[in-house]
Structure formats: structure tokens, C-alpha cells
Image 1 (cartoon, each protein chain N blue to C red):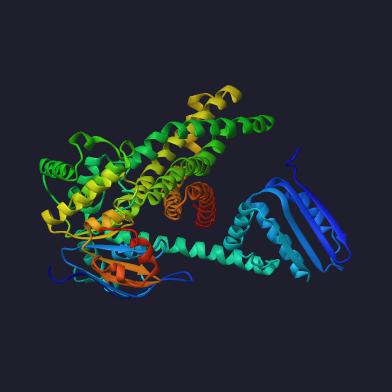
Image 2 (cartoon, rainbow over the protein chains, first blue to last red; image 1 turned 135 degrees about the vertical axis):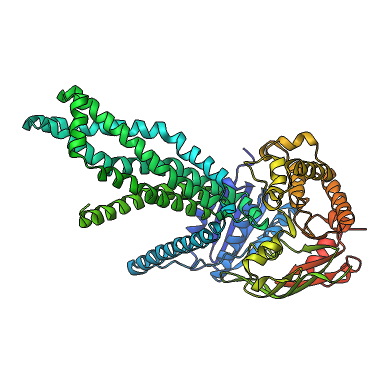
Amino acid sequence: MKNRPTLKISQIDGALSLKFSGEMTVYNLSKNQESIDKIDLSKLKHVDIDLYDVTFVDTAAALFVKRVEKHFITNSCQTQLLCDNNEILRTLALVEKKQEPLREHKRHSKKNIVEQLGKAVYKHYRAFLSFISFLGELFSANMRYFRSGKNIRYKEIAFEIYESGIKALGIIALTSFLIGVVVAYQSAYQLKIYGANIFIVDMLGLSILRELAPMMTAIVIAGRSGSAFTAQIGAMKITEELDAMRTMGFDPYMFLVLPRIIALMIALPILIFVADIAGVLGGMLIAYIDLKITVELFIERFSDVIAVKHFYIGIFKGPFFAFLIASIAIYRGLMVQNDTQSIGFNTTKSVVEAIFAVIICDALFSIAFTNLGI
Amino acid sequence: MMGAAIEVQNLKTVFGSKIVHESLNLTINTGEIYGLLGPSGCGKTTLLREMVMLERYHSGNINILGYDLSAIGSEEAQKLRREWGVLFQAGALFSSLTLRENIALPLVEYTDLSATMIEEIVRFKINLVGLKRSDANLYPSQISGGMKKKAALARALAMDPKLLFLDEPTSGLDPISARDFDALILELRSLLGLTIVMVSHDLQSIYDTLDRVAIIDHKKIAYEGTLDNIKSVDSKFIKTFFGKYNE
């Protein structure tokens, strides 16, 4: 093949000749680079870069030729470019004109662990502060909101209760029913050994009403409505809908934030109530099948041993969990930056942080109630 | 023309460690169509967002319709917001509402007009911006970019504002729609006596509609005035931007 690129290197005393030929393109540069790197520079005085036989040079190859030239000049050799092809000369000239000088990259010195730790802590501290400032703005919006009944947006609240409350009834009931079944099944096995069958009622009543139903409901709602809030508000931020609202004088807190928070605070206790019913039903079913405890007996025992306060405690947690889930979700939505990746990032964060916050809150309640003797 | 609608004095804007504007001054008179021009990244849209109170500035002063933005209370801010309309670059129509509901929203929220009156106003605005009546029931996702801009303009005009802010009103439109939009803006100005502030890159639109312009370059105003003698200004941006255009 005539156009096959070749490089002939010949050296006579201090004079080196690099004779390129054929088509020089981006695909065949690395080989040439290798052979040039091998040349011993110590005795060189003069280098001829011979391009007479080259038929074509693309811009990458032109850059390469310039680099080779520079390489020899910096090693104190004289160079001479031999070329009579106008097109090649033009390409070389273009490259020379438009080339950005390669700046020395600043080497990132390896950060030491103290610096990394400090930066991480500071970042989290800033994120915490910005959440606190969100809460502050939320409460100041609250003050304005409740100043007159006219401001309360009943339609939006009703819509959100339907969206995140009523529509979630099915999944909440099913999840809770299955939790009731699982807990009853596992404990039935243990209780049978001791012949303490009837205590399944105490166990189920307490654990479901007090802890499991509120927790399961909060977790399902964090995944279901929390992520929806973040994504909705995040998308509205990207499309400038929030800015449009602000310029029209519609406070997003009043139109989007508070209705969602209030709606969830109303909906969650109702959902917990439904979860209570479904969970106890699930337990009742297993108690009948596995331990032969009839429905009548179960209910009689239930009303004897389970004080109504356990039910109230479970319901009481609802609005607190709802506030945490909704405010974290909306805060995350408002944190979305102008790219779609950040919706995904913030939605994930919203769900994880909401569930975490709910568990922490539950633990605090647990300690408080125990110390109060409730 | 009477008095200034907007006055910007000694404005300074800082993002992180980057200074966007420094001692920037301009005056926009009542009733004129005023353009903010400049190379991309010079802070035109930022300036516009500062004027509509979406962005905070570092120091200096912006005065709009007699309200001083650096010391404005929330009640006054609310009052001021009803006196302007803003058209965002991509329209920013509320995606969960139809065009009719989008346009009716400020009327529903801020007035106690009857439903039929609001409907009548909405129909008029839809007609005014050149949309068809049948378009009113569509959602923003169902219409083209040009229609979105028209609908967003109708929404901005819903409360009959004195001031209209337009962020690149003709960008993303085909040339015919863009010229129609220019004609519409001129007509609206003469019909409603609006003061219009716009950011634009569209040369044709600039020459067709603007009364006066401000060129922002290197953090300051490089030129403020009419387009007639703009070519005599010594600025690289003006030379390249206006150089080839023959009136």
C-alpha cells in the first residue's frame, strides 16, 4: 500500500532525520511517538523533520508534528521542518494559531483525613442550617397563613388528603395485615411451647397499636407521598413554575408547602387507625388458625388487657411523623438544582432522611412515654 | 413619556467569588420598550430576576414604580407584584392547569369577579395574544413552544399590569412566529400603554421593537440609549453584534 504511514529515522553524528511518509492521521500517531521517545537526545545538534513524502495530515497529526518540534527544541537541538505541500502547511499553521497552551495542572495534593473530616462535617452543618432556615420560613408562612381563614386553601388540602391519604388506604391495610400475620405466626410458635397461647392477644395488641402500625404507615407514606412531593416540587422548580408563582405574588409556601403538610398531618392518623384494624385482623386470623383462639375469646381478652391509651399513643404519633415526612420531602424538593439528576438525588435523600427522622422521633417518644409512665 | 418606571443605581451583584455587576446604573422610562443586551453570561437575566425580586443583589439600589426594592416590606412587595407581568423564557406555565386556568389563576386569586366575568376576560386575553379559543382547554404539555409563549404572555397580561418583563421572548420561535410576536408586543404597548423590559438576542426583534437599549458588558453598562448611533460606540461586543446589520 502506497499510503501506509511510515517513519524512517536515520542519524549521522549529531544530525537526525525523521522521514515521515504516507497519510498521517490520528490512528497512527502513537507508534511514531514511541519510536521518537526512544531516540537518545544527548548527542543531537540538528533535527530534520521531513514531510516531503507525506500525502495528508489531519489536525491531530499536525499537533503531533508541532509537539515533536517542540520536544527537540526544548532539548537544545535545532530543528528544520521540510515540507512543500501547501495544504499540510496550512493545517500546521491553523494548529499553531488555535492551539491552547497546555497549562500545568495543579497537582491536587492528597487531602489528609483531618481536612476531609472537617469538610464533611462543615458540609453537613451547612445542610442542617439550611433545613433550619427552611423550618423558620415555614413557621413565618404559618403565621401569615392562619391569620385569616380566607387564606386556608381547603381545595388543595382536600386534594392532597385524597392523593396521599385515601389512595394509600389499600396498600397500608395490606401491609399492616401482613405484618400482623407475620408477628402472630412467629410468636405463636414460641408461645405454644410454654402453653401460653392466650398471651398472643397481649403481645399483638401492644406491639401493633403502639409501635408497628404507626411505623409501618409512616414508612409506606414516606416512600409513597414523600417521594412524590419531592419530585413534584423539584420538577416545578426546574420548569421555573415556582419563580412564576413568586413573581405573580403567590407564595409557594402558602400554595404548595402548607397544604401538603396539613393534608398529611390529617391523613396519617386516619391511616394509622386503618393499619391498626388491619394488623389486629391479621393477628386474629393466625391466632384462630394456629392457636385455636376464637374471635370471641380474642376480642374479650383484647378488651381486658389492652388499655385504650396504647391506641391513642399510636394515633398521637401520626401528626408528628407526618410533619417530618412532609417537611423533609418539600425541603428536598426546594433543594433541587437546575438539572434532572438532582431530582433523582433529592428524591432518594428525601425518602431515606424521612424514614430515618421517623425512627429517631419514635425512639424519642418511646423514652418520653416510658419515663412519663404512659 | 413621563418619568422613570425603573431606576437602577450603583448595583452590585456577587455570586460566590464572581462579581456579576458592579456600579451598574440604568433608567427605564414609563411607556418605552427597553432592551437589556450583552454577551451571554454578562448577567442580563440576573438583572431581570433582581428586578422581579427573585434574586437578591449585593448592594446598590433598584427602584420600581416608586418602590425601593432593598427596603420593601412583604405587603408592599405583594402590591408591587400585582403591577407587573413576567414572561419566562420557557413560559413556565403551571403544568397541572389548562391554559384557561393558567390565565384565570391571578384573576381568581386576587379579585372577586364572577366566574362568567373571569371567563370573558380570559377569552379576551386569549384572543389578544393570538391563540384560538379551542386552545384554552389544552394543558401546557399539549401545545407547541410558540403557543406556550403566547399563553404565558396572556397570563402575564391577565391583571393588566403596567410593567411587562420578557426574558428572551422570541428565542426558540420560528422566524414567522417571532415577527408576529414582535408585532404583538408593539401593538400591546400602543393599546395598553405598557412599559416593557426585555432581554433579547434576536437582532431583528431588537431593531423592530426596542426604543432604547442597555448593553451590559464587563459588569457595567457599556452603552445606554437609542439604536440610531449605537455603531459608533467603541465596544467589541457591539461591533460584532450589530456590525453586520443594515437597517
